[in-house]
Length: 383
Image (cartoon, rainbow, N blue to C red; front, top):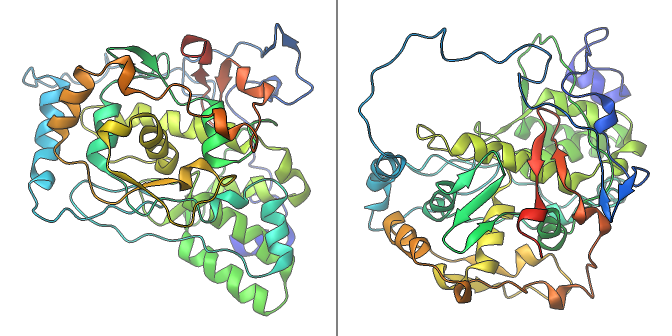
């Protein structure tokens, strides 16, 4: 079945070829999950393998490659040295792929839907704050300086003052999207026209069908376009995976998904990939990542307060970078000698009146964005 046909009637994308993989559906977590001592307990799910039941492929079968012994910092410095020597650094905009550090990439922007029916489809599950909350400037040197301190086994940044990480509470305050609900597992599909669709095509599908008053068709295209421009940004700049179409097959069930937890899990996954020394790009919702740094590490950034921000808006819209921080070496040196007094620990006290602490933020265990489960361990950083 074609993507156009699926958007129109919401049938299964490829009949007979949907096979769930990864951990069992018992990992789906909602408000009915058993809680012990104020924390949600979920069944253990092994992290080995590739999530489809097959064992992971080790390096023993591959031919050994001889590489010079160099540190991760030295390799990263060589990768970022050339772009940071520019006199006029070019902003790297975010949507889809956050960007190769070599320069600009065109991005697809998610604009606010003008149709009331489609707007309600987006607002009801809590995805509305994503429409205007994306940072237009992403400082790659700043982000990669933190990525060098990322440990995938604990999903934490290791700093001289201890461990820090982005938690569900950070997502709750910074993005204002729901952190409670259920997870999902992406189906395994047999592709006939490739694994992705272009975001620009989805936008045109939405606009054309609004004009023709085919609102159900448009209401499936727009949310996919929105999450493709924000939560599920990838390294292709302008595409989103076809598998995510299944999330919007039944529009009434979209609001049951814990979109905040899914966004965090997807960012964790992409931070794991970006922490590899050969990686020069970052996928995932970098607005969440950058806003977390801007709000907690004021002395390291050059963020300025947005003129249109008012109390009660998502906190990610309060500070935005107006110019790159500079050489990544300066950021490394700052992080090497950072002290407790350089970090804002009680950032969200004034925000609780607008966005109260949710019990789901105590959850520790595994979270997923549809693939392999990743550890979320707030008990290592919250007191």
